Length: 267
Image (tube, rainbow, N blue to C red; front, side, top):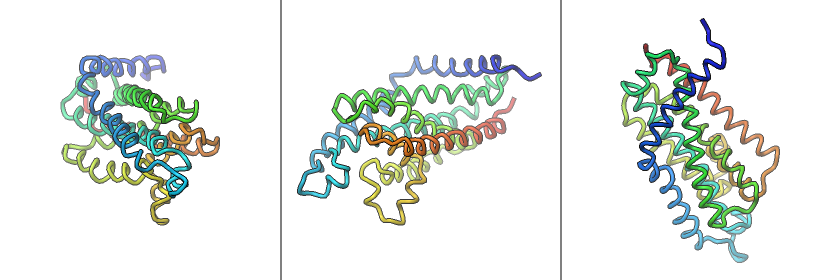
């Protein structure tokens, strides 16, 4: 007999509550990789190296960076990139580690369905991504990297960016047996996106043939959305395109994850 929406939601909440309780016991161990590393990147590259490439009237940097300092350009891009990293860690790495004989298996012997387990965990992933993004955003604003009050909207934008990676990699992580494949994902997918999706320099500096390919990546859309909001240059049309693209990728990931969770979680 099918359960009503309220009953189904209560099961999703049970799975979410499990992950939240686990996090409260081990949150200190996640601070370095989720918060400290991106913040150190921001300080070292944005505020440190950024002094060497600050736009001036006698260089081409002003035009390349849109007339803003390198810190103001780099910080929102790094916010999106850090959310991507956290989303992939929560999606691919955590899901893969829970599949064989982790907490998913006891949960599936309960009344919870695979979709309840998935949605409860994804809800927790969204909270984790948002918490890390909020900490980064606070440092970013304190350093003077934001130019507009719209910067507050970079928090949901960064969270959506993280989910656009968390959901598809959760679908994939449910099928992965070899942990080495997670390392390959970071080596061959994550790092190139870090370098060439507009986090460190404008994509306009890339060859013409590469720019359409870059615009297909969720990180480019997330970085552009966060950057235009932070700088106050966002437009309705551009923002809607970025949000719809990221939302579509996240929704597709959830659709695929429902299938892989149902297939790989056995009662």
